[in-house]
Length: 311
Length: 311
Image 1: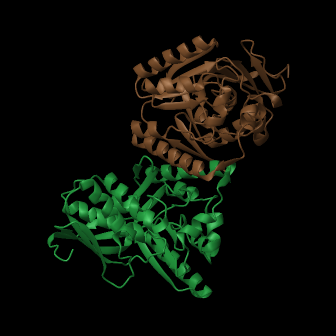
Image 2 (image 1 turned 90 degrees about the vertical axis):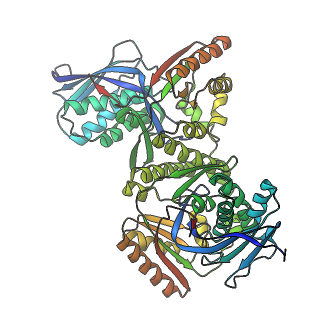
């Protein structure tokens, strides 16, 4: 690999994402304008993949075990050409935060590589490749971070086998995210879920997801708010997140439309109709975690409509 | 009651409806242009409710036990005025067919009564009253026949307590319905459902319902077709309907977008993009039930956009 020379290079921003959008567990996610990773992808004239961390985040050296590397291996296998890629990552989305850190690496790598190849692959192909990164990161191929990261906006993953991605138009929404600095492993968060659920709860959940999609597409903020209810996953998983109930109750009382656990946590997000409310929500989140004594980061942002952005 | 005189009178058509719209069990229904009941509602100057069947269908005489009577009792209780109603019903939607016969009686009665009262009540109020008719008919207050019957079109019942009805815009669709003349009691159809379902099946179901709502609102026929899948209710209930699997397989092969059990059966419905396919689907349905040797009625119709219609 030492002899490989660079053919061309691209710099891009790969956004954070909120998956498991309340009643849309495993099927609905959205892209954030903040935070995002910055990545450089270089096309090499020799086979192989090199992953470099620019800012000291410890990344697995073996590309097959790396969330950016595994998708590129899958892409190269379909290409069957004597080329390679180097990926240089500046991570700003903290791994384990629950806002799609691994998806950003995977999506950024394949979007960048595809750009260097003259966009030979469709967005759906790119999601298919990037899923190998999620498999490396969490053991499960789930697309509700990958799809919004690549497509932007709010995306529905109706089905993963076969892949069926649907973009859901929505009105302007402000997103407030708090990341309390505790570790919730995705595998743990999956394990505590019950394998069976009550039919009556499932019916309530699919009423809510239908309402949420209709609310987004009708730009009906009240309907969005009423539909942001998760009677299945949140009651179980929120136990892993200190302060969750208090944060949610206070934010909704302050005017947030609703929200919940981002991905499998520990980040918590809230949607608001206006920016002022989103900032008020941030203040309340900060107050709760300051009182509890947990370090935390917050973001007040909007929905990223573009997905991974070549700059 | 014999002395009551008629103040005014209205004649109306109350349409049949398809509830439990495939993946939208208990939450999604649509109104049909055919068949419909014709009803006359008369305002009386004395308290009381009289229900008359015009065509020999046996109806319970006690209004409290009648699907048209119970909703009017609920309405009169809120009015607290010394008036009454007479309802004369010409039933064309066969009771027990699974296309909303009881809902048509209930919805027609309250819409007609409200018209005679100068439309004092909102459509949501009328749904609330009409639910008492469903309670009489099946023991359960479910609104996915009532709501489309009153609102027209495709309606989502996001929640029943509190009542939250959302109209879902959709492109032109042709509906083919076959009613094989066997009895499936709603209470039996409810009883065979499992109280618990697998989380993975529930996730697939809410992916489908989200896709179906998005497909309707985007006028995306392919997405509608892909989303018309029910992995929870249909596998259990379809066993009660002879020929179901064959009808469904053949109709989809002939170009139908998809379909399933109407309400709790025994009627089966299919949605098609064009009228020609809808007629082809009817032919296939007729062939299957003729071969099985089951008497049957079929309808080739469209979605009724208006709901109960004053004529």
